[in-house]
Length: 341
Image (cartoon, rainbow, N blue to C red; front, top):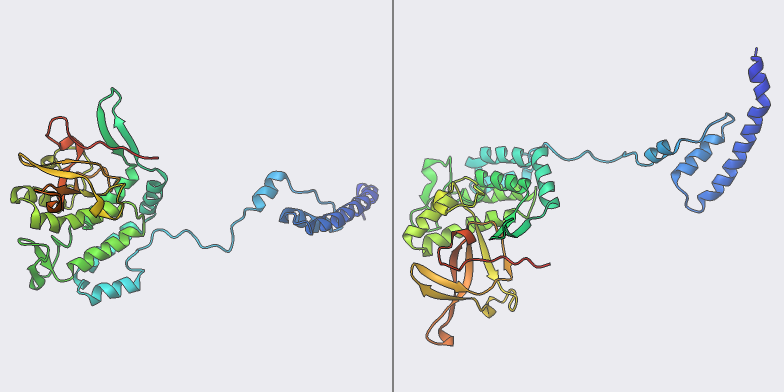
C-alpha cells in the first residue's frame, strides 16, 4: 500500500509535474535562440513525471567542460624510435653506427620533463638588465632555467660538436674532416648531428639557434682564426659541456658563439653595413651598431664589419670574433646592449 505521506503528496507531485512540463515547453523554445546545452539538458530532465531539482550552478558549469573524444597528452615517448622515416634516413646515409645515441636522445627529448622545459622557455622570455643594483653597466640577459636545461641537453648530445669530434665511430670509417686540417671525422657524423638537431627542434625552436651557430662557427674559426686563438675556442666549442657562466673563455668548461650581422639601414642587404674594423694591437677595433644580434648570452659573436682600405672602393666586408662584453680588454670599449620595444 502507498504510504499516507505519499498519497498526501500526490496532488503536489502532479502539480509539480505540470509546472515542469510547462517549463520544458518554454525552455525548448529557447533552443532556437542558441542557449547552451545546460538548459536543454535540464529541459529533458524535467519532462519526466518525477520531481527533479535543477542542477546546482557549480555542477552545471563543470558538466559543460567535460573533455571527451580527445587524445591524451603526447609525452614520455621516444622521438627517434617512433619516427620510422628519420630512422630510415639515418641508416641510408651512413649513420647506423650512431643510432644508439639517437635512441637515448630521443627518449630524453620526448620525456614529459623536457617537454615542460620547452613550454616554460617560451612562456618566460629573456630579461635584459643594463645595470646592476648599484648602477654599474652590466648588459646581461637572463634566461629562464628551462632554457638552460634545453641548451645543456643539446650540447651534451653533440648538437654543437659531434660532426667535428664524433664519439663511438667505427675505426674503419675514420677520415679527415672537411671542416679543416686537424679534425677527425667519420662517415655519417654530420647525418647523426643533423638528426640530433631534428629531435631537439621538436621540443622548442628558439634555443636551437645558438646550438647551430656554435656548430657552424667551428669550420670558420679553424680555417681563418690565428692558431693560438683558434685552438682555445675549438677546445671550448667542441668540449661537449654547456657552461652558461660569465667567465673568461680560458676558465670555462664550454662555450657558445652567436652572430651579429644585420644593421637597421640594410637589413638582409649586408652590403649596406657601416660598422668598421680598424687594425689595433692584438686584433681589430670595431666601431658601429647591429640591429639584430642572435643569442646575446653567447661567449663570442661572429660580427660582420668593413675593413678600411686606401679608398672607398678598397673596403671589404669580413667577419670578426668579438668576445662578450665582460671579456673585452680595451679600456672604455665593449658591447652595449639596447633592446627595442
